[in-house]
Image (cartoon, rainbow, N blue to C red):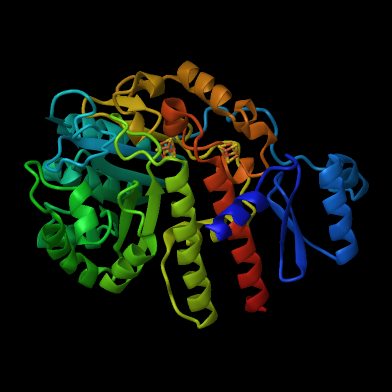
Length: 436
Ligand code: SF4
Ligand code: SF4
């Protein structure tokens, strides 16, 4: 796996303040603070190389006046407005996925559904507290959210009405295993412009090995049959596939091609770093293989982009968008900031993965966000407080890694994360040079 070894070596952190992206005789300087990219002429490239070797980058950046403005400071976010909630409308599921973070959908408890009152309370909290002009998202997850379809639909309708009254924009999303989808669901999601994410773990055999029905029966054909009308209908609705990657389904390129050909709006991959039983967790050699596959998918994206063709590889599309915007953030996501998960009983947690997990408790939809817990969370989780993140050039793109993974497993994937981001920076530079 020479390519991956080289990528990991090239993305090794040499300074927290600067990173070099070189290739095809060109050199580019990436400054984490502000996520800024600069072209380097050969002399300056040499100078930066030497400064990195000598541990003297700060002085060089000072001389070049590139450290005069500080983009990210140590201050935690202070009571950000709630802009997204994810409702665990059904803490129950009809599949038996081998790695499920929700432990069969029940999050370590007994199967239950969210009462309408809790869903309504959640909607009121999200929309009622929003400033006019705000952009909100209401997400439905489980377990399997379609187990509680009536409450999902009622909450959506209520949110639409309240949002219109209040002058805020609201979007809807659902993550579903696809086994219960009906033609009526397709109409409903299209009418409300849902972003629908179908959990699919690869071509049939790979998927069925990880996501069988309870009892072991294959789920793949049922899901693909159910999804077909949604794929055909998508106008306002977008239907994406999300692949949870374990050591058993590392054939990412084949998976991506199969799902792109099937008509999904986009396809994304998510590495399994922690699971309640440890099953499915990726180890170092798996992550190296995953990185090789991700780059293979990325190279195909670049080839198709050069030919003016679409290839909706979500991980790369998102990374390119963030690099293009100069995204620099001290957290990996909005969990516990403007985004919360809501349990069936109405407890708030830092995100959907922390439902039922004391580590992420944040109040309730009845009593509101527990501001002291939130403040402690945002202070502790700031990337400047994370090690070894404070010394890592990727920290404001990565944000320190998914809080849930980090709290429950640590940071086993830093080489993978940096290797991938290093590749994405190069892809961004190559694609931008073609765009002129
Ligand atoms: S978690 Fe992210 S920011 Fe922290 S060391 Fe790893 S790659 Fe760098
Ligand atoms: S903590 Fe992890 S699972 Fe939760 S929203 Fe952030 S990245 Fe996603």
